Amino acid sequence: MRYLPPQPYQELDHTADVGVAVEGETAEEALARLVLALSALLAGGGPLAVRGEEAIEVTAPGGLPAVAVALLRELLYRFATERVLAGSCEVLRLDPGGASIRVGLARWDPRRHREGLDVKAITLHQARFERDAGGRWRAQALFDV
Image (tube, rainbow, N blue to C red; front, side, top):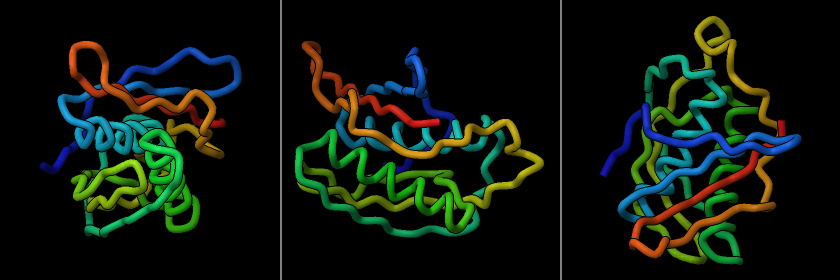
């Protein structure tokens, strides 16, 4: 399933960083929402015009939280080097060792996205990716700003 913005996320209070928390019916939905939450923060809520698609694959030891962080780090790297943001996300594979996604890429525009955050890094500190007691998936990540 392809997810498009806006997707619901909650900003977390943190002393020096910005955090987001998402939930989904499936682990794939929660991961897609994390991806799109990062883009929303980088774009300052501005619109994202998708111009192309790309497949991205990451591997990471340490379970689903580490996989989510690795994926967000890859997307932040692409933002820093190519000035592109994920404007859509489809999770093709997700397991405790890695993930594959197909993202619709949008070019960052300084006029439309000037309110975006200057995210410097994605940290493993307080990263979570788990099922709650009701069976919904909850994930969260912290971003150094």
